[in-house]
Image 1 (cartoon, rainbow, N blue to C red):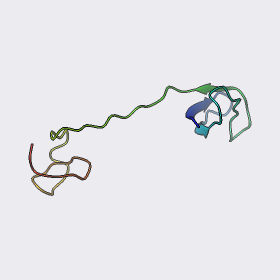
Image 2: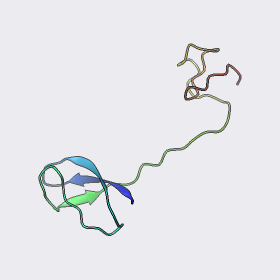
Image 3: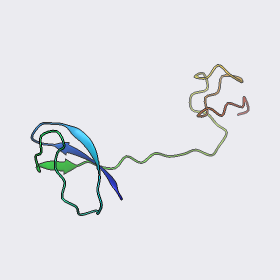
Length: 74
């Protein structure tokens, strides 16, 4: 089942809905309005390299922050 993000034009709320189908009807869970806009999907990326974008963020093992996989090797 797809998870979609929405913005309600009526009450200005942003929310996510898990829908049974892509074309399912949806309404705002806060005010019940069907006047909603589907927001663009946010896609995350996973890096498989050893380089770290935030080398000074993690004090462990040489100051590398690699999502908890600090090795001190770059």
